[in-house]
Image (cartoon, rainbow, N blue to C red; front, side, top):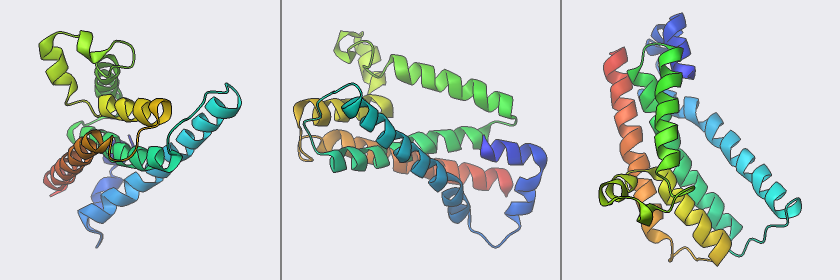
Length: 175
């Protein structure tokens, strides 16, 4: 929303003539949201542990490391959407659509293995599915980093690809 708003106001054009590289500009836009999301995760886990007395068997630093990687993928998707759309309203609708699909196909509400085969394959492209898998494995089963290496690697690759595409798309739009 931040980039789309600047696009609508015309300040994005002003920023494009500054000596900042595209990568630095994108990092400056994403890092505050990344930090806020990790703070929200901290608050959510504190409430889960001390208010609802939910036991957490695994490593909390491992959860935060996985969340940091997941957030690169999630924020990359948002950044890519903001480089493609023209208005804030379009950004909200596209993001709502993506989030709904990701939630429904993540395995949070319905197990992925109970979905049709084509949906199971599509769910593999869903970063939320892999993060939920990591959270369940670490917090409920006490999994180690070795146990969740595959979903973490998938999230890292997904985040790298999406952020690269977003920065390139931004470069095409501005340039």
